[in-house]
Figure 1: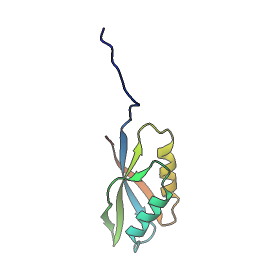
Figure 2: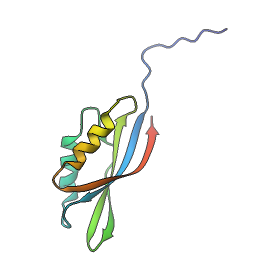
Figure 3: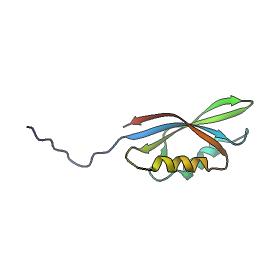
Figure 4: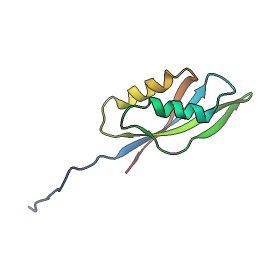
Length: 102
């Protein structure tokens, strides 16, 4: 049977979660909201790409944000979602998509 050698530690993939973030107010500054989200993310969590906006109704827009977390970190997802939901300008968040990236 052939032997397999692994040199160095293997890095797990990352997971990118796309969220629809609904603001409390109609006239929210999404650039400022993104900065609040970035400042409140746990260590090892980062915004993956720039955000988009999506019209909801009557002038209300939602932010579509893509956040990258390590695949092998237990409990990090729940902590991150809780921190975003606790921001004063966020009404609620909804998970749109979860995918692995390397």
